[in-house]
Image (cartoon, rainbow over all chains, first blue to last red; front, side, top):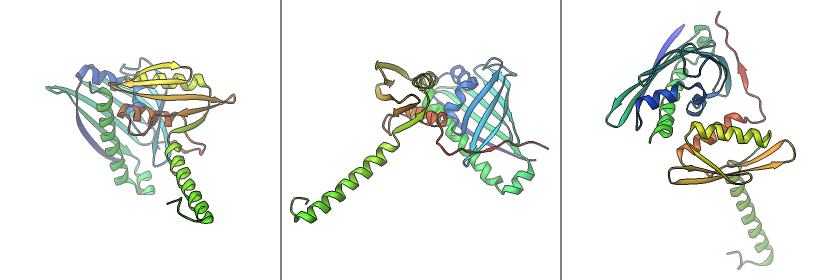
Length: 147
Length: 125
């Protein structure tokens, strides 16, 4: 397995509670994650730890499918979930109160099977795509949540 | 310029002008007009769901006409039924508020084009 991490940070003019509550709701995710086509088969409360769902992710015109599971949810502070389906990843959203509202950090740790990377030769491309996705998601969250 | 030429030239120049206008309008409208195969109820429910998630105010001042409001800005989205199973969605113009762009992006994911995507389900060995 080849492991990588991308991270981005953005200031949002809203409370940390509102920001984390929004990103924690599975149903909201396709609205701000551009490459996430859909989530379905949600089992459990949308904001609760242990909730699982199915996802479809678009990358370079190909559609990847897998499952997701909420790992942690500290209201107003932190939300984390993991995805499985070949390219496994962990998304962590951390909110800190600031004078301007909230500083939100999005960190994505992901690992793809070496066999896949060597076959496709896309390890650096995958990292730049993930970085781009994280930055775009942060900007979209600012558009949605800025008051 | 069109009025000064002889008749054949006038027709030729008018034809080219018409072609240019049609191309410009087609390019402009092709990104704003979608034909999707579904019911009006399905489109309406999806739009309302997205508006809730994006904190967009939605009103229906007339049947099939939706007014989306964000802050001081309002735009119209129209929905027309074609036959039994097709809906024509006239989207707000580009350059609208970022939330409206996100709504359009989200709708595009709900109604993919006619070419099926390559589907990959990876199994970890």
